[in-house]
Image (cartoon, rainbow, N blue to C red; front, side, top):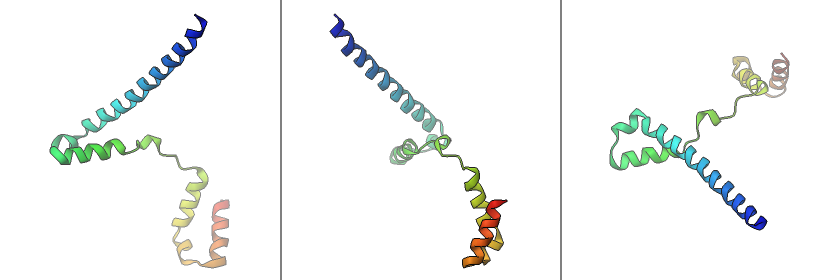
Length: 99
């Protein structure tokens, strides 16, 4: 009797894992179907749209920008940084990132 418990337990975990995966896919399908653009498309255009929509990663899954990355972005966007070259640019970026 004890030997039967382990395979049943493993099988139960596998079935639960499949249930979670199906739920994520179903929610993605619901989101893609709810898109107003999907409602106006027909045939092959709709198939292509749905395929792209389902392949796309959700925006929430995108990595947030760290403070250091934001500083780099801001310093690079500075018009002064665009005119500098070589060592002058390195010095400017160094002081800008230390702020």
